[in-house]
Length: 513
Ligand code: KIV
Ligand code: ZN
Image (cartoon, rainbow, N blue to C red; front, side):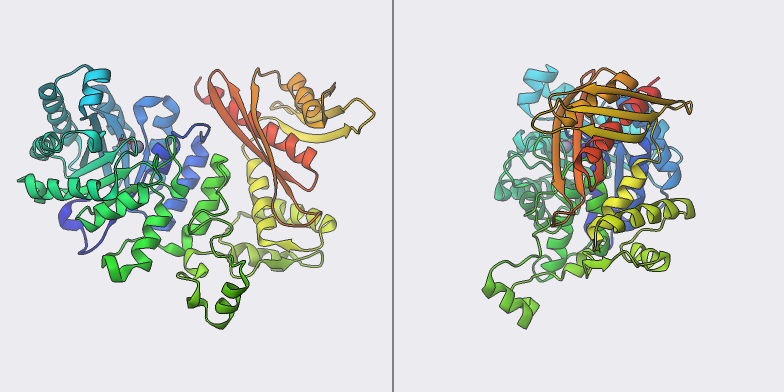
């Protein structure tokens, strides 16, 4: 987005969930999941989607091209190191976009120059402008990031920024790559750039803050206060190490404290909750209960004094109306006697629009659940729809799970699966516990070497009849795959989660040839 296109007082929201967010250890997404998230980011109203780093893998290239074809409103950005091959490949992936952007980056701090790149400042300056000029031949919308800018000498950053603007960059992104900056200091850097770079008016200043000291949002907001007009952020703040600045916190801070910032964003805040749930579900990264804006406790009042105040007047202890972020108003909904119509309506209220086939599957799962559980809440419905969606792209399908366990017998599991060619396979195994037995029985059938690195269970709602959600991470050839499964029986949920992780591993192996 060129500077002239910026509405007065608008902060551009640049979402990097699919690039920096996905870089988080264990957060790997498949191509369909990336597309699904990109479509939801479009509904959320982000201005720019950084869809990936095309040179990094054929899968990333394919995901970026697919998003480019199917998501047409926002700018679609592809990341490239300051190498001709990266830039050419990134352009190849986004060239059909309605609004393509190339994002070129190169380290700028002496720490990186001396110890990693072994290059002089002059060499880096030259390469930065040469590579921006190369990108500019493809598109007018070129962004440049001097990596590790917050630890570089400000005067050197001014020099680089001036040079790359001369070469054609129209967005200058200042990354706090290792989350080292302190708000006032980072704000001074932004102000310094505005004051000391003669051609800065030809570009938009962007910021990209990591959360190693828990300051990513504070640093981004301070930068905005000092003149930055693009913020790079991710849903739920996911990303490398401690993550990136959280999109929902940035958007809600600007909206809630409009009196202070006097700025706006294009975010439809009522889509925040849904987007957060989707990203959490697909990446397997849960949202901590006390997480601002989207955590389970973010709008819960436990203290009697607070509850009393909120009943009298919500404003006493609530600075935001939960409905502004799209948190569903009611939580108690359906039961055994609820029919198709009521289920369909509740799905629509929760923001789902399922195809006829998906709806039918979700409805039978709902009926099955209603037989086991008296009250079906919104959270149950979300979990159930997610479980149904997980089965859509599976390679092997889990048909049956049967387990015998207890404090006397040897835990034993029998498993029946349907293979990709339709063949029905069955086997059994012993284990140290029922989950171990289930995984061993599945392994005897699927035969893909892997190591289980994480296993956790949580209940979706309160109560002994609650759905249990299991998250499993497995590792194969150095890559982590996350699987999730939900069921009122946690052993069945574990089998579903393990199958989900294995299916993702198999699909990824297939797509990388
Ligand atoms: O953190 C960082 O510096 C980055 C750059 C590629 C912008 O992610
Ligand atoms: Zn980053």
